[in-house]
Image (cartoon, rainbow, N blue to C red; front, side, top):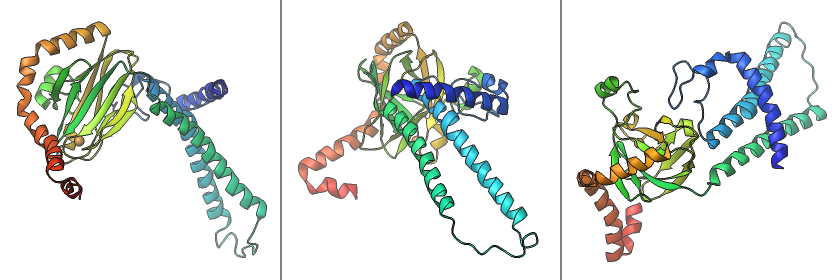
Amino acid sequence: MQSRFQGIRALATGVATGALAAFWGASAFAEDLIGQPTDGSMLMQPGVTPLKHQAIWFHDVILFPIITFITLFVAVLLAICIIRFNKRANPVPAKWSHNTSIEIAWTLIPVMILVVIAVFSFQLLFKYHDMPKPYMTVKATGYQWYWGYEYPDQKIPEFISNILPEDKAKAAGVPYRLAATEPLVVPVNQTVQVLTTGADVIHAFAVPAFGVIMDAVPGKVNSTWFKVDRIGTYYGSCRELCGTDHAFMPIEVKVVSQADFDAWVASKKHAAPPVAAAPAAAPAATPAAATPAAASTTKPAAPAAATH
Ligand SMILES: [Cu+2]
């Protein structure tokens, strides 16, 4: 089953990539920046994870050709109707109203198209769901309006990642509104599980090059994962309208070698006292976490009331 899929996929990839390259000009692919948007780019950001590779394949080889075909087909039908069957060209319309074979065809063909889309789309959904055994877990908490990252496996407490101010971003030559004060650092070629949650309202953790987007909902922990195949800096952003500064809570992920990651973990641990000075931010989280527990111990009715 799997190998047949791969055979079909290889064939279809060749055809679709050829067609796309001819259409957009092959050079457009080469110029796309890795890990951030490119001005004037027509397609999705290049992928650096298995999930994104497959998502791009699903779009380029399955969805995009189908959408293109349907759009052109309907446009041609419309044009035929407008030109050949307008009042002047065709003053006396035909009177017939049923054609069984056409009706069977226009029911069955769309069903088959949807089945094809469903098969490949479920394949991709299962892949998202089937996380390999993760090397480590990162907890990403969305706040109004910044991210907090915690590394439970490495015992690194939550640190805050703010947007890098415009002057500093310009000075450092990094993209403003994508660069952060403290990046999320992860090792290359390792499965990283990301647990997302929201501290105040719903946010969403999204990194296009990873093909990852996951809601960060208060009172709920969602899980997603990525395994990046090359070292680099990858940018994302909050993807759920979360208030005034929604556009100013970027996600910066630095993917580094295992040695660099271990060194970073060690430096983070030595930097523990300054990080502990972050209680300025912690109190905001603690009462919120403490309240439901306190409420549930005092009055069972209280949590239910709080949810309304
Ligand atoms: Cu947000």
